[in-house]
Image (cartoon, rainbow, N blue to C red):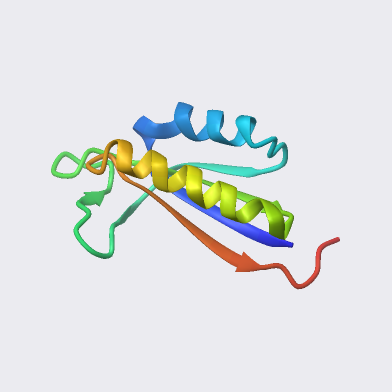
Length: 97
C-alpha cells in the first residue's frame, strides 16, 4: 500500500476531485486552507492581503499499482496550468488498521 498526498491551489479543487473519481479512488482525507510555498519557484499561499491564495490537500491510501496512474494524472494537471500549481508525494504504508 502507498499513501499519495496531493497539495494544490484551491482553484484546482474540482479538477482534483474529478481526478480521484475518474481513477476510482473512493477513500481519502481532505484538508482545506492549507498554507505553504513551493520549494522551487512557487509564491506563498498564506491567505493574507499580500499572499491571498490558499491551497488544499488530499491524502489517499491506495494499492501500489494505482500510484503511477495517479502521478501521471497529477503531472498532466500541473502541465495544464503551471501558475496554479499542484504537487503529489508518495509514501510507503507499513501497516493500516
